[in-house]
Image (cartoon, rainbow, N blue to C red; front, side, top):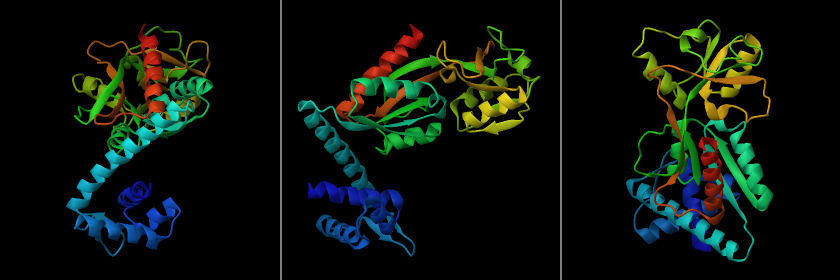
Length: 300
């Protein structure tokens, strides 16, 4: 399908802001990409890109056209997936954007379980901050997004959601490790690592602290839970993360998750989402069912 290939050329140029970089990504020569764009512009009757001294930029018409082509390409991928499903192949690539808190335990388990039944389905997973997860879903760069407390957005369709509490994570030999719950005022006695404002859990902490005299004085602020984990393992400190970051029962990680018990400390929602207008490819839709069942089992 030649026209689909040319749409992908335009998409790649729009994403990279450069004909040369897009050609490198597509593994074709720059002149071929430029020629097809010029052909499309001639056919449409207007410029899609403004040529700049360094790179290109979408024109208003180009922005409209790119929004159209990304929906068209998503439909092509879905139809191809459905054709393969009719042939019993169950092939495909499921693209997921997710917050880091799910990278250690939840996502590896879901992917492993799914591929035991469907070994021909591959996964492409990007771990990023909350806002970037949403942006990738809306730009059709990810079929599915897993995000904590996303801002209301009419372009998102929620496929599943689960309530999540903030927990204090400490080493197994920590003096707080045997507790069933803990208060923030008890945590401040230890070296603290807190999520930065790109992570959803930070908003819950800030909302609670804004109405209290208690102030946190973190030794470390980061957008990486992996860094915070290693920090508290070395220092005997405490860091804060949603409960999904804890290992499943029976699996040791060297850390213990203790629920924060504070009146007025809100819980949040872990959301599985997709772009509202999309009909998901078969493989992605199947992953949704598995993830939904897994999430439901955590609250049953």
